[in-house]
Image (cartoon, rainbow, N blue to C red; front, side):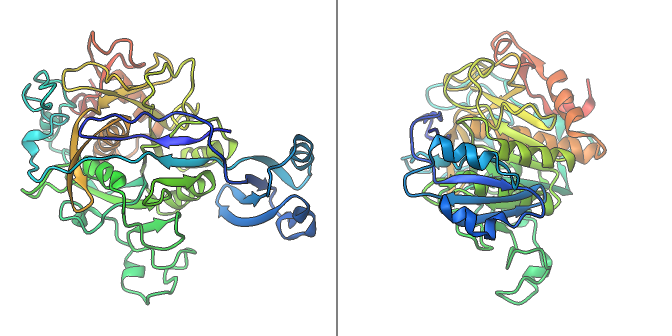
Length: 428
């Protein structure tokens, strides 16, 4: 039995995410279209259906059992003509972090956007120019700082949508905002989903009681408003989608529901700073559905210092054309010590060590491939602002090909270097 761990660290303390033995919460059963198996008495032989996810790519249910299913029972269910497949419903969890958020935040400390060789941190001041080349990218006329038509889903612990650096960047569901409380005003199946949805608690409020999702959102699109920090995109619409609780735990069945919801909200990019554990067909189905909808799925490569070519980390390792696997590098331009790598399966690298961004009620420095991922999500958003017709496969190829080649990163990813926003937008 494995788990997925969403990985971050506070004040450069890195907490790795990896598969380890923790209980899963029942099983995910995907039933075939038109089947009434979930409402039949036959399923009660095996356990109780306690949660369902009716998505655009199939109907899934969580089957809870007292002691787990025997191999024989698993095989019987797998062979049932009403069932497509059955697999463990793995727990997804976020390890606790400690530390105090800094009270003084400013763009000058955001080395990932503009590295002057002195703003990388106390222990690693950095090397000038080792960044995503954001300043030069913002000078391009069309799509330089993004576009308010671009929607990016932050699928995580939620987003503090009232944060002064984020409130103007949220994608607002006006039908629900102007509708009646407790009523599904737009008829999409979700009540009061003004800023997104909370699949951990099954309500329309994706508020972030943890801070991780808010941090990722700020990296992507903190307002360029002369306060706090600045995001990769000055113009963007962020959809807050929560499937991890404030304590940092969640379930696979909620992750696939979150992806389905993002598809229905019409997002262009999904930013996913979570991963690990075994390959799961249900997540693959969800990501494939996003691919078919033309949505780019950016995913953290992982923080185990592992080679993903030989030790896969999911969802980053799913072989789907819309997946962009992201590793992390430091302000000195070297692969972060914690970051996974892979010449075949990690596509690009981005800033991930000691990254300053929005946090719950404040700002904080966090480290991890979790932080590298939203940098890339933001660059994808800039690229789509300039060239809205690009497919996810074309975007991935562009980011790999236009990355700046460096000796320090040549063995870290397929790109052999660091993501360069300017070169990506100029296609050179």
